[in-house]
Image 1 (spheres, rainbow, N blue to C red):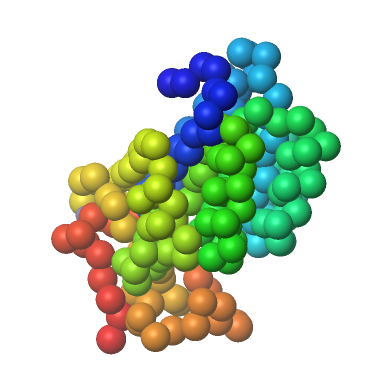
Image 2: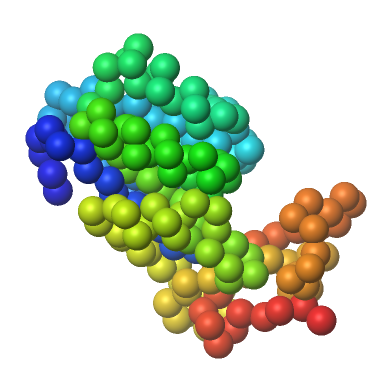
Length: 192
Ligand SMILES: [Zn+2]
C-alpha cells in the first residue's frame, strides 16, 4: 500500500453486495490515519441503512463519514479538511459527474479510494464505476459467498416479494418487499 502520496493515486474497491467493500475502505482509511494523514470520507446520502453520519459495514465497523447528495461538494470539504486521503463509499450512486471530480482530486495530488458496486442487480456495469476502474491505479474486486451454494459470488441478486426481480422492474417499488442476496453465476436468476 502506498504510504506517501505526492502525485495523486486512485484505488477502486468493487464487488457485489455483502463482499466487504465498506470494511476494506475503512481498513485503508484507518491505516492512513495511523500514518498521521488527514482523511476525509464521504458517501452518497441514499445509503442510510443504519447511520447517517457513519459508514457502517455489514460486520459493524464504523468510520466518520459525511453524507453527500452532490459529489461536487466534496471539493469544498477536501479544501477545508486539508485531506490527503479521500474515501468515497457507495460511489455507484453518484452521477457520471463523479468521474470529473475524481480526476480533479487526483490532479490535486490526493489519494482517492472509491468503494462501490461494479454491477447493478441486472449484472450491468453501474454508473461511473466501470470508467473509474479503467483509469484507477489499482482495482480490488471482492467476492461474497453465494447464499444458495456457498461458492464465490460476484453478483447481487434482487428479490421482489421473494422472487427474482425482472430486469425491467423499477429500482424502487412501492409496497413491495425487497431483498438482496449475493449469488454466483450458476445461482443468479432473472425473473420472468
Ligand atoms: Zn451459487
